[in-house]
Length: 274
Image (cartoon, rainbow, N blue to C red; front, side):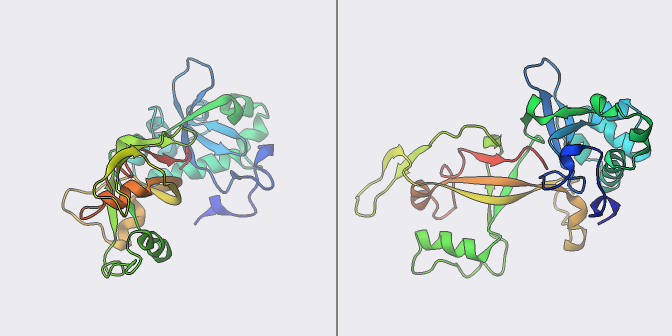
């Protein structure tokens, strides 16, 4: 926590005042493009119902030092280059962006027209996946959720004995990650009814979803070298909302002994801001 989280800090961006998802204390990153334009995708920061264009802010001279280096990394159409820089650069960029958008911003006081050059209305923007995802893992982080889902498949023994000792998860299919708002097609797979002798191939009748918290891992670690719990936070770039789609009737047939496969590989939705 630092001055960027100060509850008393306010912004000159009018829509960032009051009850909004993106006040100045919450400045998530995303990838956007002006809707209907031929422009390139750019890195932006959500503020109220506007998007701060990092490239435009850099061109306006509003960023210096490590923040300027981080802004240079934002010239690519994903957040990966920025994420690879590490927490010192992330913090520097966030600090200067917050100062630029604050009510007492010297840049804004010197030029009240700066908003027109560095802000893009969200209503005029198209949003994309924040980063290029190489892989991802999904974990049972809640004992209540694990018990609830386990009861669907093992009513007599919903929570397996290893749950409270080791992180329980599965490796997901990164190619099926889509940004919020992308249509999801009902998947087909093998489904075996309780009293049937063999499974049949058909569309799922038990499409389910779970709202989850997703974490973006920024800096990595050498293969085989563990990251301690004390150091883990330094590797986390940010968080987002995740919708974990599941075909429960397909899952109940295929998940033993290696876990979900086609029942969870058809779509995973993430929010455009992280």
